[in-house]
Length: 321
Image 1: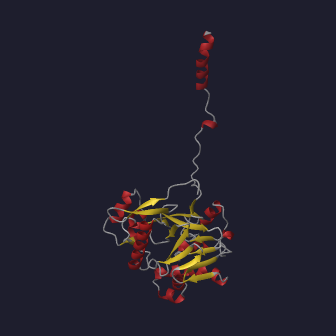
Image 2 (image 1 turned 30 degrees about the vertical axis):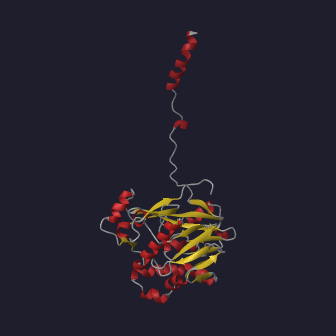
Image 3 (image 1 turned 90 degrees about the vertical axis):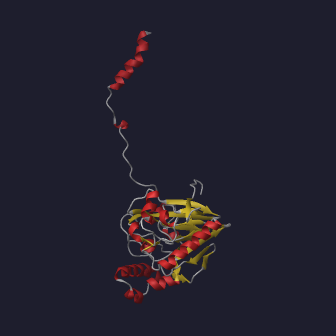
C-alpha cells in the first residue's frame, strides 16, 4: 500500500525530466485575415459586401473645411492613427434575377494593399462570369480599376457597364483632359483605358440622373465629388439600402461634421450639401447605408447626435444572413 501511495509522486517526478516535444511548441502565427466578404438580407435581396483591401492615406492633409485641429482631435477620439488605414469596399446585389456589382475596387492602380475584390468575390461563392451588370458610382481609380483583368480584358465578360452620362462625358473626353491640371490628367487617361474594352464591346450604357436600372435598384444623382457621381438605392420588401460611393470618406470626422470635405472633391461646395441631404434622409427614415470607405463591411445606419452630426451604428453581426 505504501508503494501504491508513492506511485503518483514517482510518475510526476519522472515526467518533470521528460524533454519537451514538438507538440508542446508554440503554434506559428498565421498572419492572414479572414476572407473579406459579409452578407446581409434586404427584404428578398442578398447584399454581399466585398473588401478590396485597405490603403493608408494622410487624411490630416486631405480633409478640408475643418476647423484647426478638428481632424486630429476626431481621429484621436476614435483611437485612429495617421496615415489613416482606409477601407475600400464594393457591394454585390443579388435580386434573385440579376447579379449587380456596384463598384469594383482598384485592382493594381493603388499598390499591393488593394486589388483583392476578385479573390473575395470568389470566396463569397460567386464568379465574375455570373455578374450581369456593373454600376460605377464614379470613375476614380479605386472604384473602377477592377473592371479590367490583368490581361486588359473585361474582368466581368458577361456584364453591361452602367454609369451616369455626366460622369462618362467628363472622364472620357479628350478635350476635357487637355484642359485639366497636370496632376489630374492621369485620372482621365486611366478612365479611358479602363472603360474602352466595354465601349468597344457595346456594353457601356449610360443613364441620365435618377433612373431605375433593374427592378429594385435605382440611381440617385449626387454630383459634387465628381460631375456625375451617383448613389445607388436598393429596395425590397419595404427595406432600403443606399450605396454611397465617395459621398464620404472618414467616419470619425464626417459623421459628426458632414460639412468637412476632401481634396479629391471636384466641387467641394456641391459635395457637402449632397452628403448632408443623404445623411438627413437616411437618419430620419432608418435606411441602411453601404459605404466604400468606412471600416469593412461598411454597413450600418445613422442616428442623429444630440450635439451635432450623426452617430454611426454598424450593422449587428449575424450568422444567418
